[in-house]
Length: 300
Image (tube, rainbow, N blue to C red):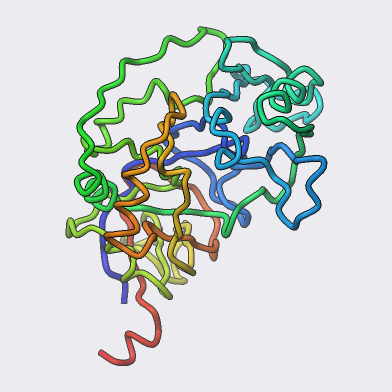
């Protein structure tokens, strides 16, 4: 049985791993997460580990780099791919080509070792291709961390270049006054009908579907007899947090009290990861439904 649990409050995409992201009104959910999400990343050339990607955990300044793409234009080296940036704006305001030597040199200088920009068709993820968190969970973490509201003024953008930065977001529109939700770098933010923090734990083993699919006679949220299937993910694991949540998404300044609050309140987890089970279009305002885990339903 499907249970309505809330609605989609915000959608975020991060074209370059650990760089500034973009808030969307709608996005295509494919088999490898949101189209264009984390398809680019810097590889640490001298790192031979199984995860050589450079992240803000090693270089907080990465958060201050802003992917840019020309509206309606694709990169020359990726014809037709409108999701990926053409240039990166550095913290010093210089705009450099994504695959240019100058950008790699600048990031390598800040990191202290050589790096190389890489593109991966299936994305470059830490654990899973889609992450979800409830705004009530973020609010509670902010309360426990003792943080106060931080109102940011909009960032002026060029008229002919679309920034993938989220500095211009009205963070308060997410109704999370005490903590910037961008610290948690979610793909989907859910506003819950039952405003209980860390409610995401109840979704483990279940399936989240987004929106309704229309049948000829009536609207149905999920199943096999409609015309437009709702995108869905299987909830696979809790999102174990790291020092990334301590970093201010604009200035990259650390606030250790954030991670401490997550550890103290919820064993260092906040939100969930999921695996895509049905592709489709995600949009802000869609209803979110939960199909509970089979084991739980049998015990009812």
